[in-house]
Amino acid sequence: MTSIKFFKERSPEVSILKKIQYPKNYIFAVYLHDQTGAKLALLSNKRDKPLSVLPLKQGANFDQKFGYFAIGAPSKYPKNSKIHDFHIFGSINCTSSYSKIAAIEWNLRQFFPKRILNEAKKIFDNYKISNNEHQIAKPFITVDPDDAKDLDDAIYIETDNSKNNPGGIVLFVGIADVSFFVKPNSIIDREALKRGNSTYFPDKVIPMLPEDLSNNLCSLKENSPKKAVVVKMRLDHRGCKIKHEFIRGIITVEKNYSYKNFEAFLSDCKTKKKYSVYKKALNILKQSPHLKNRLNLNLAEKKISLSSKGYPTKVFEKNSLRSNELVEMTMILSNLCVSQTLSQSITKYLSRYHEIPDKNALKDLNIFTSLNDLATIRGKHVSSNSFNALLKQCKYPEKKELLSNFILRILPKAKYSDVEVGHFGLNLPLYCHFTSPIRRYADLTVHRSLAFALKWEMDDFNFMEDHKAICKIINESEKKSVGAERESLDRYSALFMSKHIDDYFDGIVSGSSRSCIFIKLKKFPIEGVLLKKYLDFKNERKRFSFKYGKRKARDKGLSTGDEVRVKLVSVLPYNGSITFSL
Image (cartoon, rainbow, N blue to C red):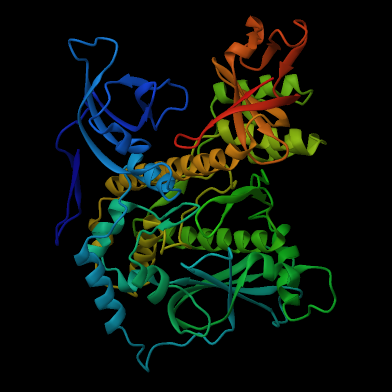
């Protein structure tokens, strides 16, 4: 248990009040009751068998309900535990419970206190644009997922008509000016720090800021004047940055596009001339020395479509489009500009760092590459380009995807730091997050640092902030959100597969553990397991190679990357487990 103390005249303090360990008899589970008896199935572990318990009174009424259960062994029935107390949150038969389970399990703050909501509404109702605010008169556009509501970045690109920069472009990136509304040490700021970031589930979003701010006042909706911080960059025809500057004022977005809709303007169709300079900019940015050496795993994002009743109707991979790439590169450049400006000032700020993979990780990777006839990577020369070159060697798309996922798993996780350090994946000597202040607290603090460095704000709060303490909080928040989002996707995927029991699928071996191997299906972007009882492990290569059980020849090995035909034998949507047999 930790506490965060805020002070008006000095930095916040984080202190450990008490280390709380869950009692051994206290579990987060679902109660299952049928004619064979009662059981508690853990929601956090896909492998453990359900625990037999003595039935609750009127236990049938609690069947399929999940919550916290306090258990202990009774004296008369040593084989069955007794439920001493419980707190029910809902039913696993309700699809909205899947995100709720993930949020509870990862201890996310699901609801805003009433006083926070009231304060956000007060800010929303009282803000009026004054006549003397600087208007940045450019026809900005936003390009986001089609279901996005918290639009915090906009772009505008024009040809540089100056004589000394032939073929160059001028890039404007407008970012919602959240720091203007969310002041340091305010009650909304304190709540935002506790949340750290927004969390995105298939059926809902747990926002960092109340919706009056995140979806309304700060969101860059079309035809609505908004407070913004604009990064103006001049680039030459090779993508080299000549200079950059920052402007604070009002922007009005001309149009909100989805990635899919804006993709048409970047195609080769000659009739789409409206945004021809954006297409030119995409080609320039691709060869930019600031961007071309970044790690490019090119992994598709897993998405789930839900029916009006919340049931998964489609599980698919959303491939990156040119519109995604254009926005990604403009955001990276903007973040780089901010980190360069702040590194040259005395203002403290939060950097985003990404470490080089260690020797053990590279050793695991080289075992994988040797089994797939690919080159090894030497630790002394490892770089993002090393991985890019390795990926180019992979000619088969499915194995290339496996390799990309393997590289992603062995890489250290990017984190926030209170000191200036480099970013391995982006191949940049320094970097920070600035472009998503609606949904990331780190970006909000960087906006404050920039405002102080540029003398837009005279409050010296940034010098008093304990950046090390903030990093600790938001790094942990990010870890929890990633875990909750992943497990919510797993549960919806398992529910989707529940209608395919006993069906056969073609798959590919994607990894392994001591008890099972992981199979990714070709038909759907879904992964399940082959349990140990179906396999005989080869001792000498137990991490990456296996032998089939009785149904196949004993001398036939099964390695990572191999194709295999599997049968779906069971799914448990409440914990996201999917099990195959041969």
